[in-house]
Amino acid sequence: MVQEQLSDAKSRMSSAVEALQHELATVRTGRATVGIVEHVKVDYYGTSTPLNQLATISTPDPKMILIQPYDKGAVGDITKSLQKSDIGLTPSNDGQVIRLAIPPLTEERRKELAKQVRKRVEDARVAVRNVRRDVHDHLRKLEHDSEISQDDLHRSEQELQKVTDEHVADVDRAGEEKEQEVLTV
Image (cartoon, rainbow, N blue to C red; front, side):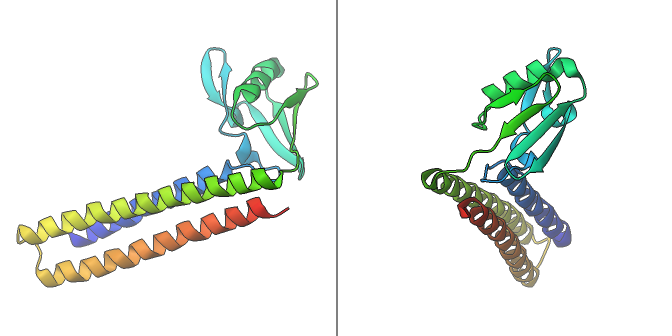
């Protein structure tokens, strides 16, 4: 019973770390990455479809994102969706492919993005701690209902704290790497 709770905590905490890494991939740095645009939804024949399902996205050089739609008729829809999105880049298309030039970031913008990264990292830490609190409450309930002993509760609390510390360290590491990437000119 205790092991089920601990394995549940591990999987939920790992999910929080993965969600953070996915979110951080969308933060724009001075370098082109496909993560910036792959989450953009395109209204394609009345259906909201992720861009990565409608086109091949590549980065031929560090300052350019190239989008090649599978259906050439979708170029206009993709261009409109990119203009409406919050990525802050202006697409240019030649009827075949869409190009997004990545301008260099100003120092002020870099600091703003670093602040966003720190906020997302803190949100992920809170998510990990919330998982710890939920599992901890459940373990205390098991002990209160006499399903486990106080010694088992103490051992499981220590194990839960160890798992929490590992996942918080993963969150911090991901945040530091992204912040470093954002601040690098």
